[in-house]
Image 1 (cartoon, rainbow, N blue to C red):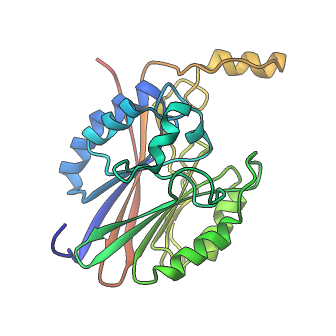
Image 2 (cartoon, rainbow, N blue to C red):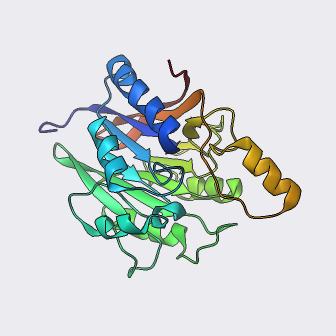
Image 3 (tube, helix red, strand yellow):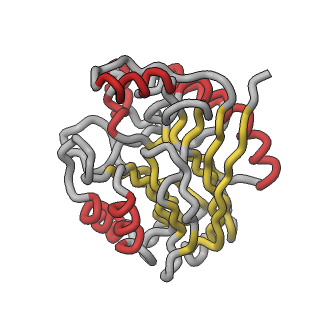
Length: 268
């Protein structure tokens, strides 16, 4: 974007789950781009390949349909063949910034918007999460302070609602937007916080509706009944498309508005 537009629109798409999620995204991106004149599209892609992890072909498929950058979470490590690609400058995928510095990949990207930059950041929570990571509050605060003239857009991949809300208030007025991911269920608390940060606890998912978070319901029900491990398989059928649209004033770096998007894709 050679000249800085005064107002830009960013579409952030929730966790894409397997083929049903990819088909829903492929269907709705051109429609919403035309309706809303979208400038940038970001998406959480940690479940894009068969419901867990990412592969190069699925990454390329997402880029081809218009996704500018992918964020991720704890599942980004599940496809070992993709991990080396995380270090490549030509691969637009983030892993959470608060993993150890020795972990492959990068936790943020600076995306030019005329004379300014979007600071797209990925972080992961610690409450009810298995991986031992650094404090996301401190990691994000330090990065935002370092790039103080940028427009920070954060994907906070976390389990606990309380941790997401607390981080939202902690960064209120510092981050332009903070969007929660990971739980795959879109929350109805999208709003501008008192100091202007655009916030939602969870963007939701793009994946099969009649499922348990995108996985075949029969598998998860049996797992609860027997307490035995089961291999997860992505469900099929109609899919939900969950995203959030934020409008940002590039001069002030502040969000002007945000709204949830939830649509149903019915395969023909």
